[in-house]
Length: 125
Image (cartoon, rainbow, N blue to C red; front, side, top):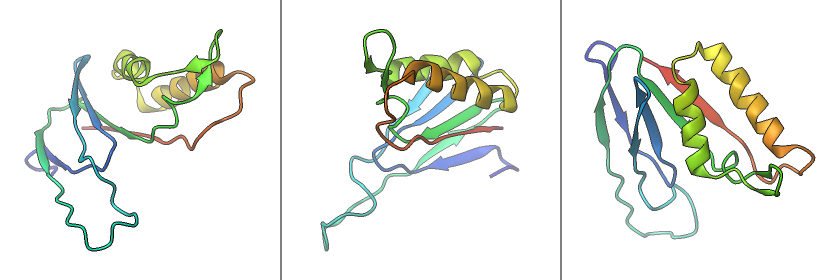
């Protein structure tokens, strides 16, 4: 809602990250997927309304970035490190953020095979 500067979030298994002036807020997802083989099972999805301010960043993403093996010891990148990366770049211009996220991923991955899909979407208010 651009006029009222509000966003409604409803997620399935993946959180929404909201960064305002280098401060991270994490909005938890629903603990079930949208699809699957649980035919007839009731799935309630909770919506969360977020009041935005000019300059705020929102990020949604798949698990592929954090789950990528790499670095000196061939370990996973981890969600904690991914969040720290996004906070550190959140005030950059969007094109710079894209470049930093991509270069950081490729540097971490090195010669390791990509283990999963990688999707990162960032939006600025």
